[in-house]
Image (tube, rainbow, N blue to C red; front, side, top):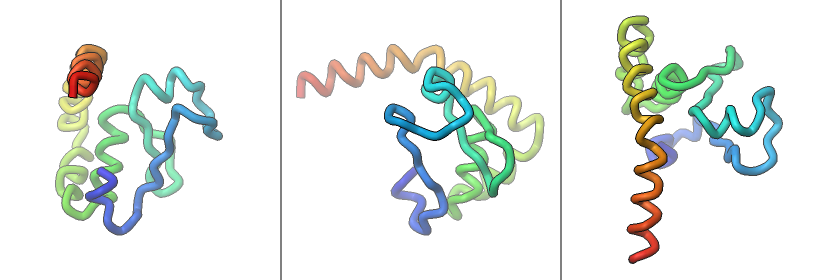
Length: 99
């Protein structure tokens, strides 16, 4: 996403280090979070949709995600991904260690 954000519209924050945020570290690391134009803190699929709207190439996808039914479907997909994420991470780290 950083490569797609050529305008620097997104301020990426590494939640593994010290961060000034109203959420605790476990909550920050468990799900993706974003804030759009000083609005409320968003989480999960809504946060991804906000990020997509900030990137011109992905903006149409982010706009489609404003529809509550589309966003609900994306949230279901995101939650499914979260269940397999630990296995994907372990697999990635094993492959990286072998290389």
